[in-house]
Amino acid sequence: MNLLPQQSGEPKPKRTLNVHLTETSSIHSIKNLSSPEPPCVFLQCSLVSYTEKTIELFLLDNHMRNQGLSVYYATGILLTLIALPEKPLLTKAKAAPPILRVGMELSYPPFEMTDTAGQPEGLSVELAKSLGKSLGRPILIENIAFDGLIPALRTGTIDCIISSMTSTPERAKAIAFSNPYLKTGLTLLVGRDSPILSPEDITKPGVRIAVKLGTSAHKYAAQQLQKADVFVLDMESAAVLEVMQGKVDAFIYDSLSVYRHHRRHPKATRAILNPFRQETWAIGLRKQDITLLQAINKFLREFKDTGGFEKLGEQFLPEEKAYFKANDIPFYF
Image (cartoon, rainbow, N blue to C red; front, side, top):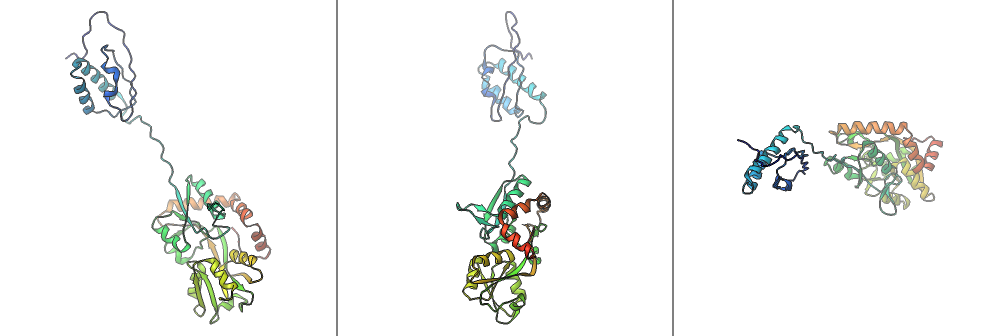
């Protein structure tokens, strides 16, 4: 069977018809194919997804107009498609990197806090931004109460915790931790007239101790201070107020916070800054996120080696850094 339509008169020059189709195009959209002048067609298609069913529909659609031309054009398309490479020529857009959701409680300045516009800021926020840049992922800060951070991590609400969190054996049973990025310790904020003069005094019977819910100080008091009266409070500021009003004898917290609270209330408080328990802060992750853990450890190592932590200390903690260094109190990255 001769698929080419019969022509009379002088032969006409061959023409090249370049047809560029989109993924949703159909053969019905090729207007030039219904032209009464039959070119010798060479199709240069940017689509390879036409099927025999599509060709069949094209033939049916054009049958009543010119059966000979329909067969001719359809055959040309089919032969062209056969010659195309097996893999599609369509270029897919590169997928955007996944957002890194970072959990922290924005109530612990200068590490985790908000600016005047209510946006996250602080040392931990800048650390999270640098981490996201290192991983090539945009970050999203999720403001979550401290005692809800680990549950949020385990349920997939967040991807990691950067919230001045102490790496403890108890927490390590539930989540994984990065390498430590800061060393600190538990210290005491006491009232001006408090009977507490040293860490040994908080072990005496009847001593009133304030701790913040979910912190390492809370864990320590529950396990080690069996003879004391321990008051567990939701907010750090509430514990400080209890000390100032003489309702408790001491507030157990990290050395930096104790120092800052005493500086704000020098007449009503005293700071006992020699740590009675050494601690380290680390980034919390899910145990199964091994690849992310390795990437974070690599980032922390490089960030320290390039002076990143020193710059953050100068930016957010210049006074504290100088005081702790002068008094040989451990608080450093």
